[in-house]
Amino acid sequence: MIEYIKLFWEGAPEGEPSVILYEVDTENERLALRSIDIFADGCTRDIPDLYDGAIEITPIPTVEELNAHVWGEEFHACLIEKAEFEAIWESRFYSGSFLKSEE
Image (tube, rainbow, N blue to C red; front, side, top):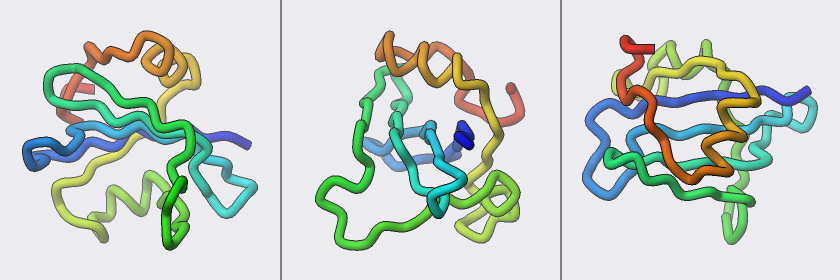
């Protein structure tokens, strides 16, 4: 089963994505199939292989785990539909919210 996660990074440092979208294979150790970095200006970077060149492959936490703030108070996540992920992947632009509370 594939799960789509939108991760908000509140106060992301300059040059880092404010929002990250993940396409997660829940039946393969929760590894990401694809990812999209979204920057504060709405520009995006499609990442077809999150693990390309990675030394360590780590699974993507669940929305519940991300919202438990184990990785920090600045991270907030929610599930999204495949259609939203695909639209941003194809258009390479994001015009949505950068704050979880505005979702």
